[in-house]
Length: 332
Image (cartoon, rainbow, N blue to C red; front, side, top):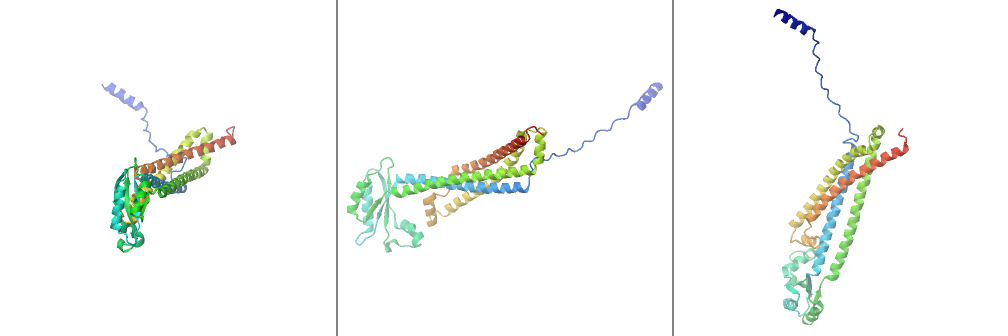
């Protein structure tokens, strides 16, 4: 036993000392090819946000005008009006009743509604002020005719029957006036789409300049990476990722601001309902709400601008690296 203990002690003394455990050193963080935040990046976000905001406002305006044009076109086949002008010896109430009775007797007329004094005064309030008594002024009165869209009445025959009974009555089917408004609306939509395309083009050019500026600031790094074997797709992917994030930040900010503006106008329209200002606005733009299609359009513009930012930066980087290869075909 004593010999075994001495042998074990001698073996332990002859064993090499234990090696120290390696200490984990913190890895050095690799710097990105494209700086994540710089003055140019923040400026580009602001530019994209402004362009997105204006693009969304343009799209919202185009949506409002386009929907209003559809409403105006439908009004051609839904309504007509008969205006009765005051004259000496004419009983206005009796004349309105006569016109309404004659119009209601035609096939294709669903309803003939006499616009009362209060509604007439409200229509004239923006020009003549509140508290107007229509009986004290020579104000024409209206009869609104609701017609069958599929089987409209014979307006010429209606005019021929009304004129002998009420000589001061005039039938107007609004066709000429609404046709002009629809033509104006279509022209406005065309101009709005052209402006939208120009804004998107300006956004693309801004991204091109920003991408070239970022590459100029990191040109030596990009060229070294390219010459040591980094593929153009890898380098372009770094720029594409950076500018995609930048573009989405600006686009989301601009789109959110536009949505706030649309909601504000819609709230104002609802608060001014049945007022002279609200009546005039709703006559042109409805309730001034762009609807679900308008908000989906805003989201689409945000995505399109983000995608354009990424694609533009990718193409710019690939073109830049192709120019380098053309200047140094032997790789030196």
